[in-house]
Image (cartoon, rainbow, N blue to C red):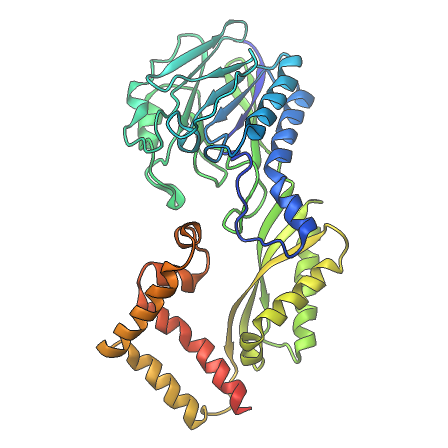
Length: 420
């Protein structure tokens, strides 16, 4: 067998809409908005620089139907760069870019080979002794185990299976094209190039079963380095399966312990130190978009809760003070608790008792439910169906008892501030 190398990418979600960011800082907003395109540009540049023999894209190239043709044209342009470098691309469509989901189509360069959506298809690269097998999604919700119909491995070839799958509902992702590691192993392929799960993971090394993760994190649930896998094969054996970062923006959750903070200024110093450390150790020169999680027991708990907007803006000022395009605070998450020196005053105890009894009060819960339902119905559909806020999630899920329990710390803080 010959020696070759290839790149395995997935879940590019080109021109995916932003979530979790507003236009409050237009420079940061524009940079994050363009990040999926720039990540694809980096992937193509990496393929050319490493002189790979081919590129595999295992689904969700797009994020759904395009508002116009610019998204498709950008992809065609990038594939043209690979065409000039004589690098073929084997493209499988996943649930976000299924035949039934994308209404617009553009002619792709001759170096791009798209897997059929009606049945499994195989492409052979004779000079490399490589066979690549896969099946695109015909519709968004594929519930069949596609692997069962994949062809037998080509004898004396290095066989790659390309599949977009939830693999049993990993990491909370929808279980599209369900299968198991057992099904994949039994196929007899040498490498499984998977897509759909956005967390990078090598599930097995005999054979290699790999999720490269998505190419660029798009919100706070997609934290850490994002990129593709560079795979090197010598005489039919994988000798390297290296993660290659392609992201331009890195998302992180940054816990900041406030137990020993002696002032609000001390709290902002703690936030600054935490962001500076993350920029040096984890951002790798990329724009760091972070959610700062304030933790610990602190005498400033009530002040933090009632001044959340001010805390957020001052934390953003801390990040911007590090330099242009270095860091941005997406949100402040408050997970502190009060450091009490004695029992709470009577009015606070009365309020806490009322809130804790609300769950067992049919009349009060009915009133709460009616008021909240009216507010939720006024929200745009995309806000209701893709909420990141805990309280909003509980409201849309109609879990009103849990919602009341989550309100207790905020109410406690508000009344405590009034008492002081």
